[in-house]
Image (cartoon, rainbow, N blue to C red; front, side, top):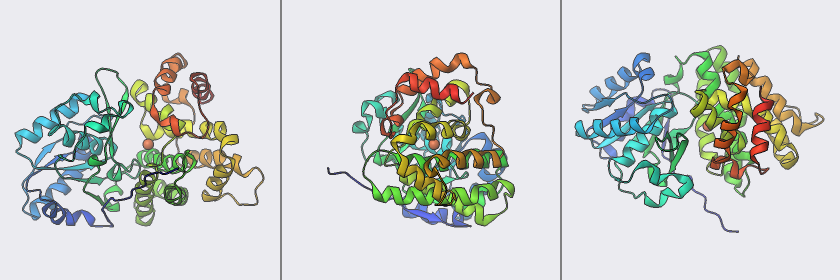
Length: 382
Ligand SMILES: [Fe+2]
């Protein structure tokens, strides 16, 4: 079997990296970027920090801060208006996954006229995406989604109310500027939820079907770094070594999941679109159950995950210990473990399962799933 592997992202990494943004913009041919952020980034002062860097570099810019926590189609249309109204020629997206995903889709829509649903990955929409998109630099402010090195944007469409993945290699940012200092002010709960998202990317990528030893190596290191540093970053937000390693873990998780994700993400997406749960929290609630479900189909892989998470190699039932280690880490980070604690009602399960089966993420899961499996997985998490 012949497969295609690709790891071409340019990354500027380290404390203070944001100060070199001006150089990277100029080198990318951008004179007037649209800064895409959300209200949280404005309130945290990070948008001002970015504005200061651009001012010092003598780069004029426009700001668009209308990105919802789970971006919707209307956000993208407003972003396109802001881009055109501001006379912009490139994009700087700063924030968690939402502004970075929205930034990618604004980037797409300023040069691509079809409605967003035509680019849906489930319909092979990537075929309609050309290289004709403006330059983009992504600056993550959480250590979780890894969207800064990803080629897809997720948006809830008007037509299907589903978290829709829009994928194309042309959507990958020209630069990821990763500055761990930007995450120092993140509250413990967000640090925990986003960090578990990074961990989930590593675990699901490592267990995903397909032959991709490069992604596997990156995925295992992502898991190791998250297991060692997430608790520290949650306990002390100023622990810059922990913050740095979580930033690396998040970026590596997203590099690794080019191989594929799994049923945990398929279950998590409807929990955000239907019940408003934070994506990382949704993963944290589902992951231990998914690992138990996958146990017999991915024994060797789960044993490797358990060891990467610090379980001694001599432990009995090593593969089963992966789920235990994940549960322990989530609880040490102060995250709830039951859907019921997060305001999700049991009556919603059939709707959630119907959405999850339509989500492409489960197609690479080591064990195939049915709608009934998905229902049972949700119910196990109550
Ligand atoms: Fe994720």
